Every structure is written in structure tokens, then in C-alpha cells.
Length: 328
RNA sequence: AGGCCAAUAGCUCAACUGGCAGAGCACUCGUCUCCAAAAUGAGAGGUUGUGGGUUCGAUUCCUACUUGGCCUGCCA
Image (tube, rainbow, N blue to C red; front, side):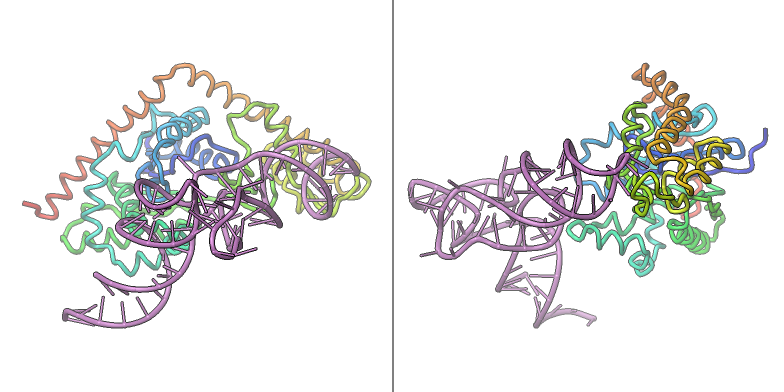
């Protein structure tokens, strides 16, 4: 089947993935494989801008890759690799940094945010983050980048860099990436307040046990106005109901929607039903993950192979780039 | 480049003249709730930025360094 173009996306190695990662990115990664040639990169170099030690990088990379593959990313179709395994990206980053405007970099919202978050570690790499990101994207002549709304300024910046580079060197060697806005549903954590995230410890891990899943679901915050089982609830503001809509069968969702409002079903019952459905949904994922994890070298081999394929494309691009720049 | 101030629990900060390092929030475990939240009780949490030095004894004093903030200078 002819694919519609090349997709590239990167994610920082955050270790074991959770529901938010799955609904926000991974399932989209999986489904895009049917329409596009996909390259999925674990951006360990980007992680260095905010991480103080590298002791967890390796394990986090393996855990995340394992989750990706178990969720349905097919390494025989897509390229799955680690950013630092392709040194060409550092070279391209340096060349691109000469056309990246300082003022633009300091104006980008994510940079300002990081400066606010970690004023004790505002490093050069943090400023150049979007330039490295651009290098990642264009190194593989990416046609399409799937992004959530918060990353949109970065892609626009990447397009500007590509135009500047091509104009300066009178070439068309770099491809301007197109943005594909993905419908990222904002997944709230079990606190029902903030976006689900590992650092906030309000997440539900994909690869955990069914028992732990039930425990975490029970901890979920519900409609605070519903004090007693006999009080009517409001599913519209209950995060458990939001999750039901994603993981439960339609008739069960409809039932809860009506019964909760007239106090016909309690929160415990509602949560146990959700946990059961979630566990059922995750069962194939967990089985596959266990199967893949049984062979300790498998993930390493996948990443090794992905790196090899990525380097082939990358070096081809770099030959053209150096030629276009008329480097002696 | 110089000067001044700061660095203590995950976070915000205390600790008198050098004498057992403590509180609030967050976290964990109870009570109460159909669960959760709220409320309430308890618990855990530390190489006091790093390396030296003075002292019987250093979070405290001295010194060097690291990081951050403020002021001044220099260059253009």
C-alpha cells in the first residue's frame, strides 16, 4: 500500500508510560502507521536539557520502547530509534543554529516556561532546543509532524528555519514540514485537577497489575458535591465518567450517565466498573508486553536496527546539506 | 571584571551569642464518608550547595569553589 508521506515524532524517555501518554500520543502513533511512513524517535539528547543525572536514561528508554511496541508500534514498518544514535543530528543542529535567530528563541513560550521552572539550570541546550528539534525533523525529510497545540509554535519556527536555510544557500534540500494537528484530548490525572503526569504522581501506568489499577482508580477524585450515595451526581464534571466514555461500552456509559444523576449507582460501583473495563482493554497490551520483555535483547535489537535505518537516511540528507552549503 | 546578598525536608521558609536542625504545604497511614474530596489525628521525611580550615563541638565563624539574584564597571 502506498503511504501518503513521512511522519516524524519524538518523545522524551520518561520511562513506563501511563494512560495520558497512551491517549495523548501512543495510540495516535499506532494508527498513523497505516497511512504514513513513520519515524518515532526517543529524544534522549533533549532530555539532557532538564535532567541532572543520566543514570535513569537507559532504563527509561527501554521501558518506553517496550510500552510503544506492546501498544502496537510495528518496528518492521516504522523506524523506532534513539536520538543520540544518529550523530548527524548534532551536525545539522550546528549548521541550523547559524540561521536561527536568538531573539526568536528567547521569545518561544516553552523557553520562557523552562527559565521559570528551573532558573538554576538555564543552559545553552535549553535555548537551542527548538533548533535541535528542527534538525530532528528535517534530517529525515519529514513531510508531516503530528503535534498538540502547545508544540505548534515550535513547528512554525522549524518552517522558518528551513526557509531561511534554503534561501541562504539557494537550495531546496530541506523540506518544510507540515503540521498535522492531532486531537489531543486532555487527560486529567486521578486528582481530577491537573493533566496526567508522572511528576505529579496522578497517573495510571499502562504496564501495572490489574490490582494496582483498581487501587488507583478507587483513588480518583469524583464530583465533590456528591457527598452521599443517595445524592445525585453530575457525570459532566466527573473524571471517572470521562474515562468511562473512552474505555467502557456505549450502553454502560449511557446507563451510568442516567443512573449517576438520580443516585441509582454509587461511585464505588462506577469506579469498579471502569477499572474492570480498563483492565480488559489493557489485557492484550500487558500480555504482549510480558511476551516482549521475556527476551531481554529484543528491545535493544529493535533500537539498534532502527538507528541503522535512521542513520542511512540521515547521512544521505547530510551529504546533500554539506554540498548545498558548499563546505570545502 | 569587581562588590553585596542568598543556598537548610519534594516546595516555601525558621533555628537568638557556636551547644540535640523545626514549622506550613505536599507525601504515607488512620478516623469520617458508597469512593474520592473536604475536615481531623498520627507518621515518615536531612551528608544544612561542594571542598578545606578554626573549635571539645559548626546550619552558625574563616577560606576557596559552584549556582542563583541585585548593584557597579569595562567593551561596543
